[in-house]
Amino acid sequence: MSLELVRVDDRLIHGQVVVGWGQVLNPDLFVVVDDEVAQNEWEQEIYRMGVLATQEVEFTSVSDAAESVERWANSSCRTIVLVSDIDSLTRLCEAAPTIRRVNLGGVHHERDRRLHLPYLFLDDREVDQLLALAERGLEISAQDLPTAARVNLEDLL
Image (cartoon, rainbow, N blue to C red; front, side, top):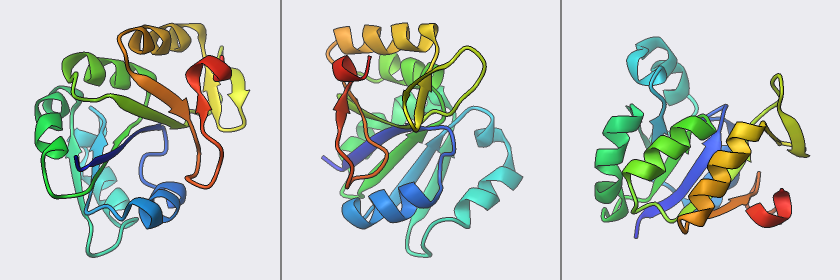
């Protein structure tokens, strides 16, 4: 399987992902799953600047990503999928049961969100969405960097 990581991170492509996870997983492809970014060429160019020249970046909507998960999972291309928020993750995982494991890597403070870890703030609806995904068998854990301890969803909440 070459779907190396499915990560929720509201910053999408940034140093922790490219350097931290990238050095460990050595991805060939980063896939940004975000409905708005998929339609914004200017933002796409900004994100492309953050990866190595040898790495590809693909931008896609949630619905198009759901149709591509199987292809990424069965490809020889090492792929990191980045989703910007819990709502998008939920829609993606519901439409693509091939996804079995998710990393919560960066969901930052907003109104009504509570601190769970220094890099993870969730509101009640997001917690409910994650619990529903976990009930369906998805393995969900939080880990900002590969060198940090992984925190399982049950321990997180």
